[in-house]
Image (cartoon, rainbow, N blue to C red; front, side, top):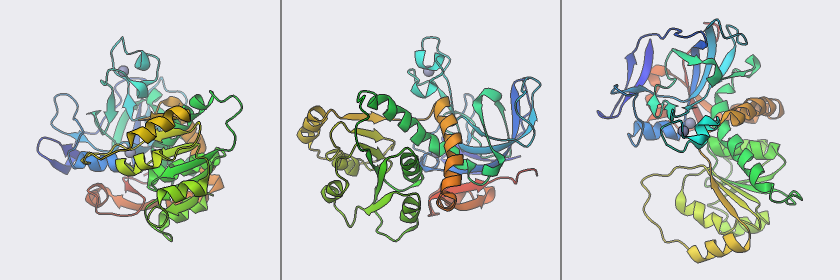
Length: 365
Ligand SMILES: [Zn+2]
Ligand SMILES: [Zn+2]
């Protein structure tokens, strides 16, 4: 079967032939891959910034944003049928007995760093025809969501952030007053973040470069967020327009911009970082203002990476909510579907759009 494989040492990415996997334990499930989403992580891996093959191999299969269809289930799997749709967990826990996070099932908070991630670190990914996975790593999705379920994995980032924000805001037992959120960036993480925030009752603003009209602004406004262009509206003016900013959800990956906006976080505000920038030069930075604000306004800055089981469950639930509430804008976030042979355009960064997807198979075929 075909797979998109990354050879980090050779700086090569190729379609190769690999052996079709078979069930090796009664708790396993064999999946036909339907679609795999492409994100900045895949682009970084294919620029050889990171990404490590399984031990003993010189290559690994790319792809972590999956949607698969069950084609075979082991005898111990009683709750999945052939034809069911599932999304796989990306990260698997480390094996260290002393990693209290992994041992507690919160592998997204792994302490040792020895976790493995499909298509990223020490594990093959999903840009291939068939995959075998343990049942407990799979999250079933309703078949009606076939055309949007590939967005579940990227949505888990916002869902994890929302869980974290909820935990932090428990310090304000009166609920914290009006909830105003600013999303930085209007890529898939930003737009799915905006949907999650609007759906949770936040008055939500998306602050991103491109002036209106553009496709990303249309999605943002289609879900009830307000779109502000950073080219047309400087940061201070944006902050004035919004009022007290209770939450900033950073999804732009641009450090200087991100920290400039941090200066405008409101009283008792939370700043969530999701971006992982690279190759950025050091910048001058107004540390006094930031430090004073953090202290005098009780602010919290938090980073979120990956997602635990709860965030996956919430993402599966909310993708259904979004599909019912905003059918057109949700579908408009998927702007390109490419056959595996054409993976270079979306993965090597030539394709534009919002979320591009590698289409591997049709359901039931
Ligand atoms: Zn991703
Ligand atoms: Zn761990």
